Image (cartoon, rainbow, N blue to C red; front, side, top):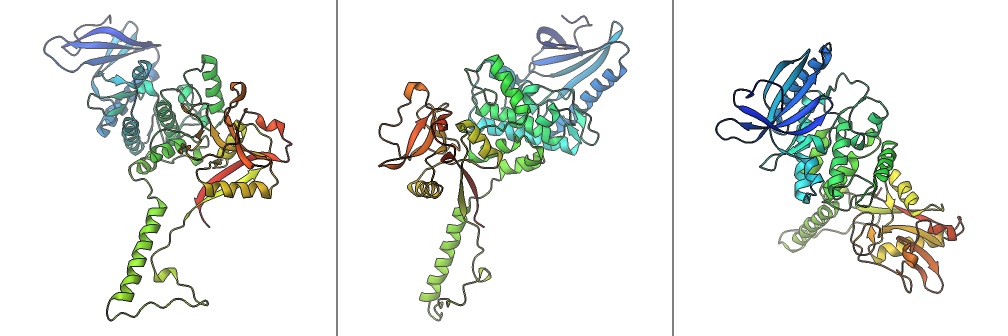
Length: 456
């Protein structure tokens, strides 16, 4: 029990201690009379002779009170400063909300819609923070809360800093740090977006941190965190709508220059996703066809003349032309493991090639034949798929060209997809070990990288 006069603020009685870490404790509060929503009191002990810590606690209170106007930051309902022996005790009363970290610890699941809502709510908080020149610097599940109405809020601005006066970063939680801040560089808005991206990735990964799963040991988790802080890219997400997956993967880029540059930019990507190219092209084609038909059939109209070979129709004369989507493939002759090949492709803005149609298969076979390749990795494995192989892009694995007897997963060690040249079948698919390219000469094996970009 707190050694302070009670009840607090004339009506609140401290009860169970909910949290304790260093100089901070959190207690449940109950109302002495009447009914009200459950509350908590956060208690921060400031030792004697440390006025800078007292000022920092007061600044946290001021920032969080201003942030409450966003509707997506935990609101401080009451505050006071009391003597505590030779030091000072800062008390902050807040509504008791569901903490995301506790929900994850209890095994709570989150639908794609809930994860998208969390992303939008916290991005709105960060948009508001940007207007105040504030960088949170410690976004993590322990500082994210859910109200009874399902709104997500950001809490604990204890190590927040001004964006226009950044200082070398020395705090935060390693599992959610951006690589640049882990190296001691000042945190900025992009660092907050990286941390939020890791939280969203975790939720889309079944509650497990990136690069981990239910079988990961504590040592495994530490190693994956270290690898991420050294700049390792994360594997593509397989869950969530396309806009959310893309937004999260860009937020988690190791290089801050490749991330979203502001919370407003990322929020726009989630609320106003880009229109797909092909529907627009088809719509333009339909309009053009209708126009031609009208020109030929309506009375008093002169049928349109076909263009001569010397004069092609100009874009200005018709509908605006949008570039069509293109799949660009490249064969890389390197005897890498499947995972090394995947990282090579993703580090260059592409991914290991996926094949979802006979047309794509023919493109790839032609490319392999041109290079005289005997084998190459494709972008699928079955390590994390419940039923068979899964493409790294999350596309359905509905098209396959398996070799005879495949997949057979010899000795339960073949989890990776390759395409290989066999006689007399030609190129067929085969499952293989992670380092399966070791059985081929380095000059005739490698992997296929794919980029999706507008045609030039």
